[in-house]
Image 1 (cartoon, rainbow, N blue to C red):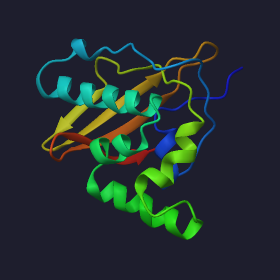
Image 2 (cartoon, rainbow, N blue to C red):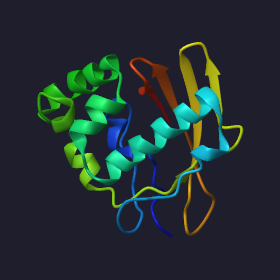
Image 3 (tube, one colour):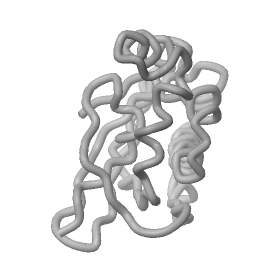
Length: 150
């Protein structure tokens, strides 16, 4: 059985790094067309985040997909541990462990309340149950990851 992959594992430096696994290159499937309006914007932001992780583009993950507050939180936790002084430095090692992430957002997986969205993400595993993880996004110059929930 493969270790449980999680779309957020690269950035769970804020909470806890979990075991990762998946096979080969960038994940390309996305079901953002299943959504309309703001929900579609949120879904597209999540898939763009996933793609930046798959490309191991730490700078883009931090600069384009995290809110300022989340970036600062990651850096604050990384500095004392000697993992660098930037968000990209802090997540570099974690992102290196990810080969690809195949995820899907269930049709009822996006809930928007004002400038905050909560997204349930199912990771497609070849064996066993597909785990569900949660992302919180804020509409901050576009939808950005604002909180990582286990």
